[in-house]
Amino acid sequence: MSRAFVKESDGAGEPLPELAISPHPNFVTPTGLTLIEQRVAALEAEQRAARGADDKQLLARINRDLRYWTQRRASARLVPVAVAPIEVARFGVEVSLRFEDGAERMFRIVGEDEADPARGLVSWAAPLGRTLTGKSPGDEVEVLGRTAEIVALLP
Image 1 (cartoon, rainbow, N blue to C red):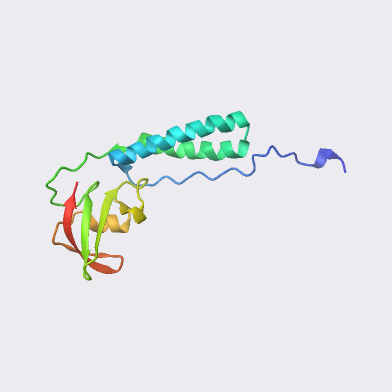
Image 2: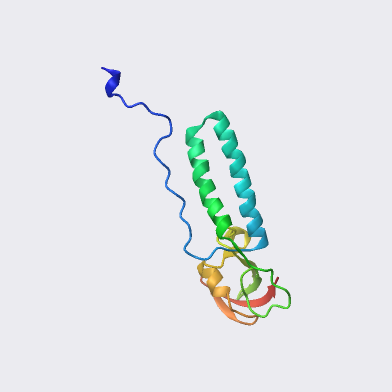
């Protein structure tokens, strides 16, 4: 068979889909902004290494991720840290909950990119973040299918 009819591959593969940018404002805590800046710096270092290794597939992924994180850094809106006393749950505030069985759980309301529910960091745009926002100590809320009382708000 003639090589004239065989497609040569440059190793780049299929183009990667862009990472979806949230339609919500990009509110960030000081910690969240630092995490974004660290991610951009790490990706820039990975980009240099991938260029040096001439790894086109890796470079494509890194460039896509770098576009996402650079845009998130550019659109970040730093929210000042709350100062005690805090009367109402809002962005950046840690909310202490006590469930009916006496169990307690803490959640900090943070930006979308900083959210990590397993560590108690919930996005302000997520259902739990929206449920907690605007509430005060003594208010009852539905959390994870259970009733809980807000017992404290911390900066």
